Image (cartoon, rainbow, N blue to C red; front, side, top):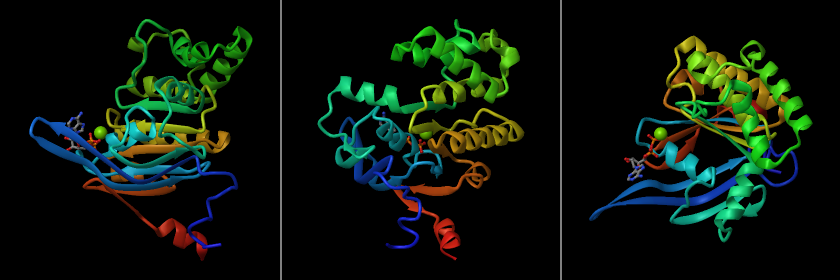
Amino acid sequence: MKPGVTHRNHGGPPVLKMENIRKTYDMGDTQVIALKQAYLCLEAGDFAALKGPSGSGKSTLLNICGLLDSANDGELEFLGQPVAGLNNRQLTLLRRENMGFVFQSYHLLPVLSASENIEYPLLLKGEDVKTRQNRVAELIEQVGLSRFAHHRPDHLSGGQRQRVAIARALVNQPRLVIADEPTANLDTETATQMIELMHALGKAQGTTFLIATHDERMAARCDRVLNMRDGEIHETTEIAVHEMA
Ligand SMILES: Nc1ncnc2c1ncn2[C@@H]1O[C@H](COP(=O)(O)OP(=O)(O)O)[C@@H](O)[C@H]1O
Ligand SMILES: [Mg+2]
């Protein structure tokens, strides 16, 4: 066993594994290389920041991890299953059953209340009313919004909206939550609370988190830091060194 490489492996396949992922965008006559050669392995319970300046390829990488976009080249496995060759319906099911998403601008449905927004993925999944009620009550309590269950998003603060989005992302007990700049619209104190909340819920449920951020302070609160530069990932290795000591 190689120390520092396998220490996060709890047995079973990694939650997500990408090798040599390349992604280009065609812009008329020119080609933008968004991901040059990206390698990433996320294990169960990882709480990882994807840090990098604007334009470094974070959103592109998250879209590929989230099965929302495909790479030009390279290999991607989710829960030990190669993703290449799956059709759109299979990808949608895989996403719906096993993934949650959090975005910078919350992406809540404006006509639904906080609790209805949280319930929505369970409706898509076809869960019965009792299961839905229990799970929504549990989540809304965990994110500290029980008193705001019936409020619509426009009657909630930015931090409260993001709490609803975090609850919605976790309601299906996904294996992986992908968050694209989830704290970029929030003040530092609220942003810190959001990271701490995701960390606590992720640890409690054993959910893996991959969080894109350009904010050093938010990245520093994560257990792993993956630095994105010019379409490549360079992992900060202090954590592995620390755990080997
Ligand atoms: N849909 C697109 N069409 C063309 N170029 C894109 C598109 N999306 C992203 N890019 C380019 O790919 C690079 C990486 O962008 P992105 O993944 O959005 O980075 P980040 O999220 O780190 O800001 C940038 O040069 C950006 O301009
Ligand atoms: Mg981005």
